[in-house]
Amino acid sequence: MNVRENLQQILAHFHIELFQHDLIQWFQAEKRDLPWRKEKDPYKIWVSEVMLQQTRVDTVIPYFYQFIEKFPTLDALADAEEEEVLKVWEGLGYYSRIRHLHAAVKEVKEKYDGRVPACKEQFSSLKGVGPYTTGAVLSIAYDIPEPAVDGNVMRVLSRIFYITDDITKASTRKKFEQIVSHIIAHGNPSDFNQALMELGALICTPKNPSCLLCPVQRHCRAFAEGVEKQLPIKKKAKAPKHVAFRAVVLVNEEGRILIEKRPSSGLLANLWQFPNDEHAPTLNEQEFIKEISERYHVFIRSMERIDTFEHVFSHIVWHIEAYKARALQLQIDEKTTRWVTADELKQYAFPVIYQKIWQAYE
Image (cartoon, rainbow, N blue to C red; front, side):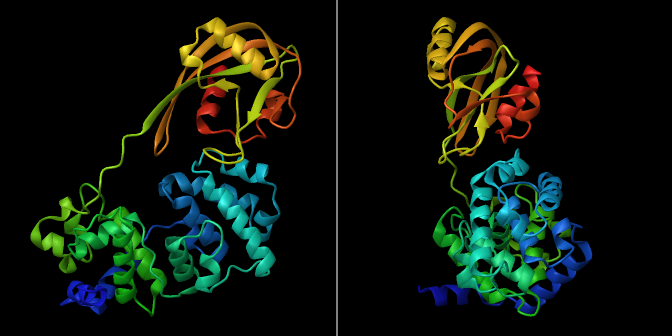
């Protein structure tokens, strides 16, 4: 069966206009009062969509206010230094999102005179902009009928159309994009796409969907069959890898703290951290002191354990055993490490787990 025949079969006997009416009417009456919905500024909508990737709305709201206060316009963000941008994003995680956004707005400033392009080909070619972000920004900001299919939307549509394809597959996402292209309200694509997302967030939730409150229940094939809780079909993710290592808050005779910049690529790129050694769990304390002393060119006078800290990423779990130590500064590599005061430390962007270590140290 080809794609067109498959779509015809999926949409057979589906009342598109009635579905659009039921969905949008509910959204307009029940939508949450969110800061990025107060105006149709494509820059602010873009920022919000990047923040909302893999992050809960409640977590995003204060970050959004803080970010827009610091960078109220696209030009302001494009002109900012990376260190400053990372600091405002600090704690929100998935830092590749903000690095890509920062690179993309610089391109918009250079190529498009600071105006977010309304052209799909132009906008989707920007750094870090995928099909979902393209559809969300163009439909919400510019009322262009582009599908915006994320995990929430796939869950909703898999139930409404009783689709049992694995939603982790790219081909399944493509199928949902084609469905949305056919059922989207061309007269109001902004509310239509936001309504699908809102439905997934508030009603058609992952484990216990509130079907009796659902505004499109009469259109839902999974509900009619009593299988809504069995959908969507999703292949189980691999168990995360566990990595244990040690880190140490090194303080010199002047009370300055040694910090180190992470590599410019890979996990938590360009953020700052305390000196650490990922091979340390295999070492005893004296070997660990020797390792740190040689690597960071210090003479450690005393060392004391603080605690063990854990941070869960999508594919890896860090277990850091943290220490504090008094050290004599011997020499320093200014490119990657620096000695800073406690007040200066606040200016640098640290991963959440290192923030926790610092709080425990204090």
